[in-house]
Length: 297
Length: 317
Image (cartoon, rainbow over all chains, first blue to last red):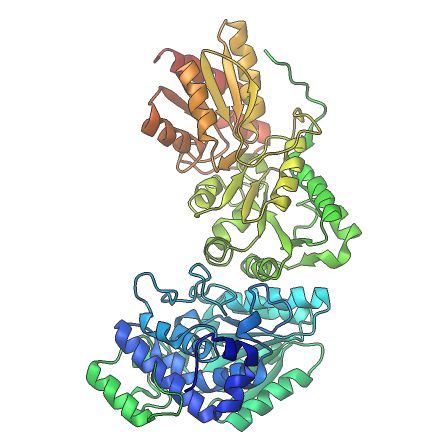
């Protein structure tokens, strides 16, 4: 039997336990199943962006990040740091943290419920391990990540700080303040990701906010910019590798993704930004995703 | 009454600068961040002695708050400095999410607070900041009264584990509290004992209240003067004990009437033992350009107005 919770066995083996046990595609499919079931059970939440960012966040946590649930500490000492700036995509974050061994998967069913550690948006107030900073009010996580990266730079620490932003979120001015700051201070151990799914609550990103050419914008802000397909693990691996090879500048990986990826009726539309599937839709989505060796929570 | 000597006019922001430098010498985790106001915040000495621990953020206060939160969670003790309006109203959501709700050990150094910022006018004269910061759960709100107290409060803020809002001003004002007095967060400071009326005051109004107490003494009125240097957490015990003795009080502050120290003390007394109160504050108004002295007089924030309020509240006992 596979033990997903923070068991002594899992702790002893750390993150490699999962990484060596499952294929990335199986983990990612299970994370999408978790997202569908969590949001459906909660009756509200944000599945669309959670599913567009599933693959690269799965890769990040299970192959890329230096992290270990057994030794996790909020100050990030001796480990890589991850900030979810687009805090509404909490379902993907919670599923990945749980599957990586930060807390029992049985908690996933408590999303958004009274008393749960799994608040509607990530909180450090409920004792949820793995979460470095609260988020939800958009545009702020890149600044916090820059703070973590700066602290590591001041201390001469070798670890990386990762942050995920939304493309709609990038309409917030503070994202660009942080962009200027990180480049100005040469924070080359800061690796940001934008989930470029081109959808936000009210419609298409180009229709609602006119964010335009993100690649040109980030280059103009002095960042090392990488554009990569978001649902191809080899391309994701290459993108992180390219980000780490660059010296002197922060890196922005623009992951070209599909909103609601993995379930046909949820894919590519803003309508699933913040809507829970009905019981029938949940069953249909799970049937499309298929079962995995990891098993449902 | 107890005599206080003005040992020479100094600005409270320079007290912050002196305290920051000392805090930096005591603890290598202390950092200073500013949004293009290093000189105004008196961070020059700190930046010269600890160039690697001074972080210039440019004119981008929202980002500065978030960066400070990340630094604080990483184990640093960042002081973020700007004008009061720009580290409160402009970045309220950032402070709420990243610092307050996020439990980040950030110290908000808020200079040029109140109407005594002077000539720049109402865009820069925040009179609402205490209300904003008071409303955040667990936020410590400190408004010291002179150079010495601001320096001591800065050291206390650095040593305290948690978010602190430290409010001080631009103009040179009397420096009259003892140089070596340690600052205890959450403790009201009894400046002068009296029996007829309590004069509660915070910030620049403490000196004005001492002057008012002198004027009242000449009329045979014994005024107790209490410096509420820490607005949150309020020293409720000291407030209740003093008013139990005097039976009435004046509350003075360089702040809007809404959400300030006056409403706070009124609430405490209303819940425990109501007493006649009078208020000296900026009422519900914006400021305007002028010298600090002109503005304090025009907005009724001086010793004469405190004394007048005391006479009136005494008649209601």
